[in-house]
Image 1 (cartoon, rainbow, N blue to C red):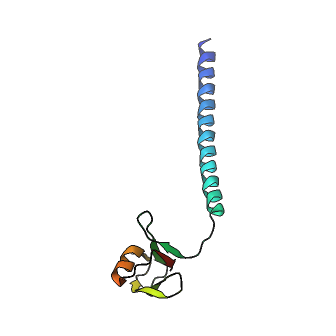
Image 2 (cartoon, rainbow, N blue to C red; image 1 turned 90 degrees about the vertical axis):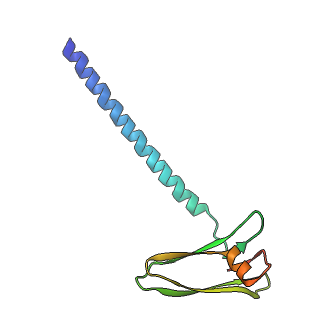
Length: 116
């Protein structure tokens, strides 16, 4: 009788472990699917900046090459007139973050929105 109880306990424990494993796998798949789904639903927008009391923009430039690469960031206002420019050298396998607010204040521009 004691053997049967032990065997049933082992089966129950193994069953519970399998269920927990399947549950964790389902959550992982669900999480991955929702991230992929959210990414595919994200609308593509033009390279715009918005700077005011509520919003701030940043541009992250990634260089996936081994060699450093020169980059020129140009901001234009809503009429297409250049209002700010920054030249930088992005090192190989590195990234640079350009804060639009800092670039605007350095150039003295008063625009709150425009294109990058």
